[in-house]
Length: 199
Image 1 (cartoon, rainbow, N blue to C red):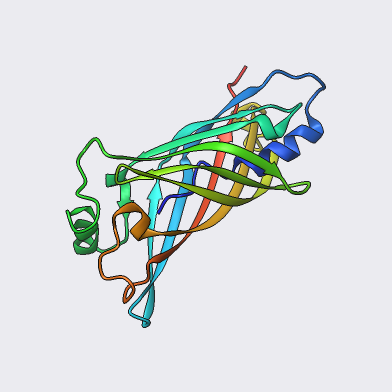
Image 2 (cartoon, helix red, strand yellow):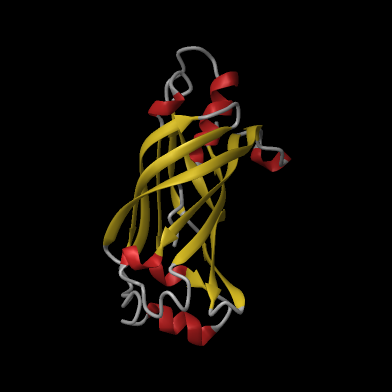
């Protein structure tokens, strides 16, 4: 359900390309785990929409200012980090009915291609792994910010922020219990910030 992620970097890549100096070396931007979330939602029995979150992603955006399409994104988070706001539901999702989660299980995303589609938009395609199953997804991304970090204590470190959306089928990841009564389709929105090294 995190198909997402770490994934929406393409938009950031485009805007940075406009302002970066010519022939700049690729720069590694570390994902800020305190501001990196993937929100998922699905229809429950046609009666309501249920929401959940994976918060605290870590990873890297390697941005090539001369050729944004050659940039890359990697991100990961423990499967146990999933939170829906209802303890019994969280426990059911982590059970063998869905993920059979162990402490070492991770949700990961690794980009395989980036298609720049506008001044601040891009499509990021990559491999999403959930439940030890890998599927290709594409994130439709928008860059929200690119420039010096606005908080004075950050000393103007280069920062980027973006949002990406996609839809996945949970049955593709071995978590299809109760579909289609509980929707197989899961909508995902990822929003995150990343920063270059200081100094």
